[in-house]
Amino acid sequence: MTTRIDTRFAELKKQGRSAFVTYVMAGDPDLTTSLNIVKALPKAGADVIELGIPFTDPMADGPSIQAAGLRALKAGMTLKKTLELVRDFRKDDNVTPLVLMGYYNPIYIYGVDKFLADAKTAGVDGLIIVDLPPEEDDELCIPALKAGLNFIRLATPTTDDKRLPAVLANTSGFVYYVSIAGITGAAAADANAVGEAVARIKRHTKLPICVGFGIRTPEAARAIAEKADGSVVGTALVDALKNSLDAEGRATAKTVNAVAELTAALAQGVKGAKQAAE
Image (cartoon, rainbow, N blue to C red; front, top):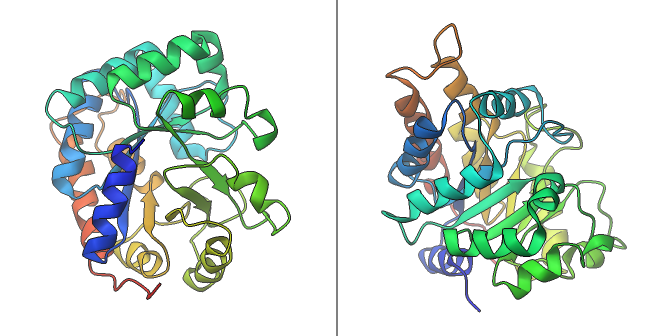
């Protein structure tokens, strides 16, 4: 079964360019503004959208994305409302791939079968659940694949050749390579090291490889896009959003544009990259 993610990467491969993947937190700083931001992303140049599911204990996230999750929770965001946001987005956009990224706990509480059915109906294409290792595939990964959703796995600098086959076994859509050991937004990605890692992972899989963590500027996005099938930017966009808020942490007239303008600049960086020859 082909998902929107599969279709988008196939199109980009034909065009000979890398994907630009954006990450924002669902419900940050409130539901309406968040929906407007998500709607603005494809127009600004996002090829794939990752939507964070707010959670109280996000252990892989740095301070910026943790704060975004807390803003969203404070504004009353829930997993149910996150799916409503996706449903509203799909009314105008039926082609941009949308991936939910987060932790297993909210899905477990919602109920796996109900969640998968509701996510599929809402228009979700894939899941990145950072705290479920391959050993737990029966919990969510296998049911998600059966429901027609891509299950996207993280590989890191510490994922060695022995571990990679387990990580890749039930992965679909794309592989998310975390360019630095540590939390989001912590350091800058090294394009040369990324290039070597991508080449190594490609020996094990035909899936596209997108690289995230540590990409903040158009130049960095371009350098990574030359080495990988996609660049993922999250913290920089979340920071742009945060910097547009008023003293009480509420959205202002600048908020949607702040995110859209940075997205457009980063997208230009990615689109200016020459794809490395396969």
